[in-house]
Amino acid sequence: MVIAVLLGSVRSERLGLRAAKWVMAQLKARGHEAVLVDAAELDLPILDKMWKELKKDKSAENEELKKKLAKVAKLYARADGFAIVSAEYNHSAPPGLTNLIDYFLEEYGFRPSAIVCYSSGAYGGVRAAMQLRALLPEVGLPTIPSLQPIPKIGEALSEEGVALTQELAEKSGKFFDEFEWYMRAMAAERKKGMPY
Image (cartoon, rainbow, N blue to C red; front, side, top):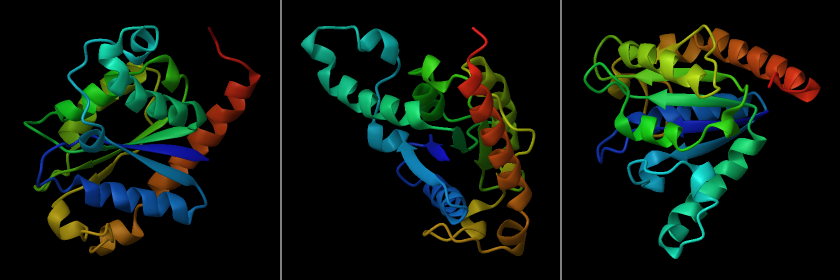
C-alpha cells in the first residue's frame, strides 16, 4: 500500500516530526510505502484557491504553488490511505494541517484516514482528533475507528522517531492492523467503481 503521511504542524520547535517518523517506520516495517507530506516544508499560503482551481489557472503568478501542489496531487492519486499526524493547539487541530487538507478534495476519494495525535500533556491530542473526525470524512477521508494518541510526546519518542515507552512500542499494532484492513477493503471497492 501507498500511504501519504500528513504532518500539519509548522512551528519551529515542533515535536510532530518525531511522530511522523515513527508512523513512517511502522508502516515501512509492514512493507508499505510511506511518503511524508510536511506542511512546514511545503509552506503553502492560506487557502485562496483549491488545487482543482489552480491547475486551470493560466496566470504566471501561481506557478510555484502549482508545482508544489502538482507533486502532492500525484502522490495522492497513488495513495491507498492517509495517516494524519496532528498536534493539539488550543484543543484543536493545527491551522497548517487544515490548510494542507483543504487544498484538495476529489484526490482523497474513498480512501481511509488514520489519526495519530500527540501533545506535550497527558491527553495525547485527542481533542484535536475529535475535530478531525468531522473534517476528514467531509473531504472523502473516512477515519478508521481507532486513534493513536501519543501523550507527553517529548518523553514518548526520540528525535529519530523511536518509541521510548513500552506502551507505544508494544500496543500500537491494533491501530496499524485496522488501518491496513480499511485500506485493503476500500482499495478493492474502488476498483469496482465509485458511488458517484
